[in-house]
Every structure is written in structure tokens, then in C-alpha cells.
Length: 599
Image 1 (cartoon, rainbow, N blue to C red):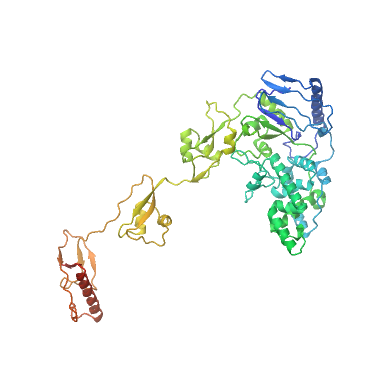
Image 2: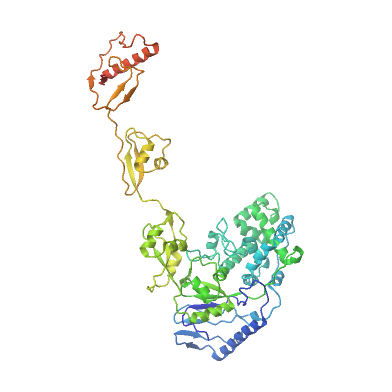
């Protein structure tokens, strides 16, 4: 009897597997292994007959429900062996094991797939073109089939249980090349390529720790449910496939458009985007290769018609690396079967299903029995204010690079308040497992890591340009324009301007009007500055004396104002001088003053 003293493992064999999980070549299940498995099941049946329905309690406190009697069961009824913790719902189930499932079957999975084909062939030039495309890339086809061997049996089983055409088992070849880690530019994920919204519609969990769009079991169940609903909606598998790719609303509108014009509404008659137009022909192309691989020069490797994996459900947190080590699997092999776990820890609070090859599941249990180390080395931390990764790492005593890598924090970003991050446990702390509430609600929210700023409303000084204003506050001209929706480079004197200043920055004083110290005038004439003269500031030991004079008397009506000009003044200079005198006279009427500069 297996020891479950850790009260940790729950086995649910969705499909017993074969001991060829690491092998690249494909070969049928050895008869010795079949006989061993068959003997185990028959032994369990005999133990069940003796035990009846009695319940025993082991020394470690586990309540063991004996196997129910196999009397009155049909050959296809799965065996059920549940081990329950006292008062807990965590179970260890072997749900689908049966003698028939272990019987020798000389067919490979491809024969079974061909026997279940139901869709009418699409005999078009486009379908033939896609067939030739795949046939000309044998290495690509071989890689796809190599990946599919892990999942194909399970998908075919699910299709047959739902009475759906087995051509749909080939759909992941088209969608993702049978890669459960695939991610499209439209954010569609997994081998069935669910976008986030459709995934949520079909109850595929997408949280910080797990993305069930990549989960082999959950995504397959959701995809087949979706395809079945689309078939019920349109009554045609080709239209259902088009809707799976394009959306049922778009397909329905295309049907309505053709119907309104009296046109046929079958798949080939509808107007649709090129991607959808190529979608069903691609599936037909893969079908052509499976039906007659030799015709296209392909050597289709044999995949045994037997389950590949069993499922292990945990009620305790366990590191991905620890689980792979206990199962005697490489990390890559473990992730190939369990691609939905997005963090280095698997949370027991969500009762996740871990897929393991059959023999490796048995090793997992044996190794777990003797494992004395911690199952999980991770916990969570929620920030209550804006935090830079380096500062947070120093605060809680973890490595900054590890914090950034594990949580995939983008460069140049900082954490927003309320963000939850995964952090290593302290070596001497007995930290509880991560709760289901955190698993469902945890988010990582980030924002650009800009310096902390304070908003100021300042008045523009006289004679201050946009450039000098920006330099004074340590910002750029474009930032000032953006904050105030300014056009051009002019700042009106006295205007109030918004500026965001880095916290703690010293602000330079605003420029003041410079007092005139010394003035040199070219070509002065009796203390009057000519219109054509130039004025410049000149350093001097002492300022030049400045004498205030009263404004000239107003000019009487009918009289001309006197004009001071040299006898050699040109007509243009005379006109300029008259204008200057008129300006002085006008200032006199409004209380202005004139300035006379002495040489």
C-alpha cells in the first residue's frame, strides 16, 4: 500500500500513460508493462472484494475508503479509489483506470483518428496548395507530431466521448503547431489559442500564478465545448471552424449578407478575411497528410493508442523544480506537460492538476515519502506604496535581480500600490502556504519609473523665454508645452504656468530686469540720441550721471514741431527725427518723462 503520510498528493488518472515519456522514437506499449499494470488493477479488484466498503484509519491519521466492489459494473466503468483526509476534500483518485483501457490494442493512434473522420473533404486548389506547403516541410511536420504525442490520445478520447469528428484533434496543428506555450500577437495562448476574453467565457482561470488557456486538460475541455456550441449554432462544421477563427458574430453577418442577396451561405460562398479563408483548407491539408502520408513523401511516426499521463492534484504548495525532481523528470519535460503554471511555485489552494507520465507518477510518490526538505520556497508580498524593485528588494531582504526576473517586472518600471510580488521565503520562517484569495486576486501593476515630482503654479517673469524658464526648473521645453498646452516657444510675461518639479530640487531665482550702468552713444548730437545711433552697455568705474528733464511743451495747433537735425540730414533721417519728436511730445501729454544723456 502506498504511503501518503505527507497528506499531499492526489492522483487522478485522466489517462494511464506509458513509460516512453522521454523517448524520441515511437514504439508500442511493451507487453511486460501491460501485464504489470493489469496485475495491479486485478490485485486492486481482489482487495476490494475482500475489503467491501470498510473504512480504515492509518497511523498518520488518513482515512482510507476501501475500493468499492466491482460487482454490477460494466467493462467500461472506471475504477475508483479515493483516499480522503479526515474532514478534508482533498482526494487521491484513479478515476479512469479499467481493465479494458489496459488491454493490448495493435492499432496506433493514427488509425483511430482516421476511423473517426466525419467532415466532408474540401477539394479545392487552396486546400491542395496548403497540403503541398506542409509536405515540402517534413522537418516542421515532424516537430509538430513530436509535440502532439503527449496530448493526442487524451484529445481523441474526449472527442469520441462527445461524438465529435476526430478531424478536430488535428486543429492544434493549425492553431499552434501543437505547442501549448504558443502566444499570438493577438494575445491568444495555448495549443487551442484562446484569447483572454473567450478564455474567461469558458472558465479558464487567468491569474498571476496560472493561465489555464495553456492547461492541457482545461483548454481542451473548453475548446471542444466552444466548437460544439458553434456547430449547434450553424449546423455545419466548416462554418463552426470559421467562427472559431473569425468569431460567430462575423460569420453570422456574412451569412445574413449573402442571404439578403439571394446567394449561397455555405463556407466557400461567404466573404471572409484571408486568414479565415485559409483556415479550413489548412485543416484539410493536415488531414490529407494523415490519410496518405506516403503520397506526400512523409514517414508518419507511430504513436501508440494508449494514454500518456496521469494527473496528480496537490493540496500543498510545491515548487516546480521540486515536483520535477520528485517525479524524476527534467524541468523541460515537466513543463511540457504542465505549461499553465506561470510562476516557479504551484499553489495547493487552487487544487491544481499536475500531469505526469505513469511511471513518473509512481516515482513521485515514492520519492515524496522520503523527502524531508521544504516543498515550497516562495511566498507573496503586497506593497502599500509606490516601490522601485531595487528599493523593495533591499527592504525585504531579497535579491533584486531575482525579484525582477521571477515577477517579470519590465525595465524602467516601478510597482504601484497594491501590487503583489512573489518573493523567496526566509530560511528560518515557517510561512504558511499562499491562500486561495491571494491566488485569485493578486495583480502586478506597474508604471513608468519617473522621479517623484511636485506640481507648481508659477508666474512667468519679464523678459523670460521658454528656454530659460525650462532650464530654471530643470525640465524640458517640450514638457512645459505639454503641461500647459502651449504652441510655439513664447511665454507671455506674467502668465501662470504649470510645472512639475523633481522633489527636493533647488529652484534658480527668476531673472530680473538689468539696471543700466554705462551707456555709450554713437554720433551724439547735443545730448540727443539720433534715430540712426546705436546704444551699448559699457563697463565703467562709476555710472554715468543721468539728468531728468521735463517733457517739451505741447505744440500749438497750426504750428510745426521743431526738428533737431544736422544740415546734412537726408530726407529719410529728417522724417525719422520728426517721428521721434512727436513721440516725446505725446509722452509729455500723458505724464511721461524724457532722458537726456550727457557725454
